[in-house]
Length: 145
Image (tube, rainbow, N blue to C red; front, side, top):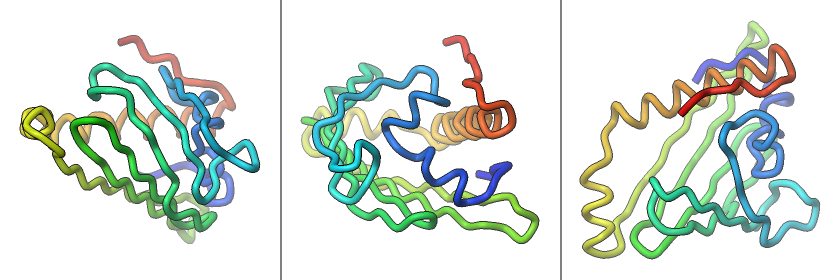
């Protein structure tokens, strides 16, 4: 993901609280945080029906402004996200998003077997557009679904 801002500007946006500013539609329930923002061991929940049952997310690594990892789990599958944020010489940032998805049962097998690289690439493209729009304008990009 090529982003039009510096790592110090982008990394704080990768937070469940700050994502309300730039991701449409984003909703979460904060369960645990000392700072009110993303931090090591922060816990929050999301409920996006297209992604299966309600998810619990735990921040498992938090190394600003370079690395962020989440473990996201529900009744059918777990996902480990790793986001590497690398400042480029030209002032832009490259963010590499990796996810490892593990089915936990037969419903999870069905869910995982229906995932495609094209769908993931499409989701990352939309997120890139959203964050770049926010970095440029300070406003959320409205995307109709």
